[in-house]
Amino acid sequence: MTATLVVGLDGHGSGERAVAYAKRMAELIGDCNLLIVYIIEWSPYTFQTPEENAERHKRREEEIETALKRVVDPTVKALEKDGITAKGIVRHGHVADALNAISLEEKAEQIIVGRSTASGIAERIFGSSTAKLVMSASIPVTVVG
Image (cartoon, rainbow, N blue to C red; front, side, top):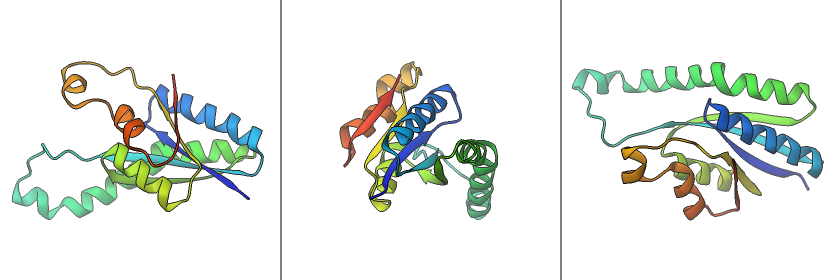
């Protein structure tokens, strides 16, 4: 039976560390697929004008295309070059909720994410996406430091 590991990619070093760890796990497991996921964070605290709302769908599609081209596709191609089966997904949403939903949709065995070194007032007030994911995920989560 093929195992699926969901890997949260953030376009930074923490995401690269998560991919490196997931690649190693896929090599150890053998029959394994990596699902490289990039979430474009949605914030309820963003206020938009009526004109921005009219263009919202088009902008969302452009954001997805940009994330695929710049972040996800190069990672998937590098993994495939190394003999790892991988595919990529980009979605809008809350990081923790979206990663959990995708892992359930794909019947994944595990979610792998990198630990962000972000700090400051926003993290103290709202918490980190990684912490929220660990607390709410339906499947095991590995956090790579």
